[in-house]
Image 1: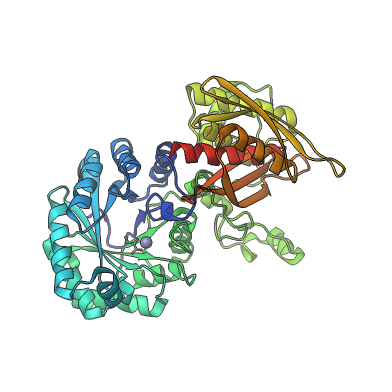
Image 2: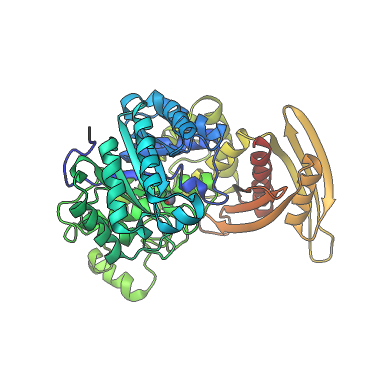
Length: 510
Ligand code: KIV
Ligand code: ZN
């Protein structure tokens, strides 16, 4: 029943689509989630946690769609130990057949028992066991998580684990829900469970660490020393608050420091890491900081003369991993020009992780030709960016057709905007405090949607004066959820206008 082929295999349970998506502003639509799930399958993660089916009809639909279409990994749906939750999760993962998993959770720490659940220890055990038994009616593969495990009394934690394994849980996942643990203590917790849970050999121990103290990867690695064999993680480390253990960091730590973790390995296709990371950043609108380990823009950049000199003499003086190992091909200038055909473009985009056909191919190709007309060099990063802009717009209700802004240091910035929606054309003009403000105000006048822009970030994607500028906007509408939109253009006002329009389209799409 276990999916571990070898006792030293570390299972990678990816929760980008569940815990990652809980990150403010990170929410994704169905098509976006399917794209991420495809990337996770290419990465060869062992389990995809596709969502929390009871949370909303959209979540249910996404888990069901992923369970129906993604081949390879197991597909998990999250549920509280509540009948309706488990029933929803069971139905949502059903299309995955025997690759379906239900992940039930219930808090066990004293603080959660007393203040959140108002339940005694015995009641917690009863509810946990009942949850696992009910989940077993839908699938064989049931995972149980004692939420806030790292702040739970160890003897009680062991008691809960033993009871749920007896009830049929095949994985027990030990979460450091609030990112409070430190490595020595977290490792000791796993050792304690190995020594005190009589039936622990009937289940795989996973760990699920949050990064509030920046220790999620360190805690996960320490847990592996004491017998955990599954790590729950997300691409780019996105997730609640400070995020989750980052997939790329744990995978590359195990690969690079085989000496420190003898024998342990994952089945991850590391060459897929860079493009998967980019895809998640594009689709969620969450930037990857430049100095982020493994996938940040500076992760393999060497600035100081001493380092560069050392690198030229012997790469390993300053580089512990090859960028190629994580699929980073540096200095890649697209060999296609504006006269290149659709076929070569399609193939290149496929290699970048964007398999395109039909209308989507046509739109992306037109955007590429338009860019190649404006820009001397088109880089892969430019293509990833235009791909995202095209994708956002094709899924949205309003499309930017025309933008004219007059601005200067002696004039009142004024924008004229033309939008199209379902074949209808709308046009208006407005003034603002700057060209971006004028463009955004005009978009609001046309759409009738007014938001509060909480963040507006501009960064250049490639180098040179003609570099594409990528704008990420985070906006809130009617005091609701934070919505992010991203767009790129060689014109940064246009990129800002498109990014804000993406936010509005996402907001209108619900
Ligand atoms: O952080 C946490 O405890 C969780 C559980 C649902 C596993 O995300
Ligand atoms: Zn979590």
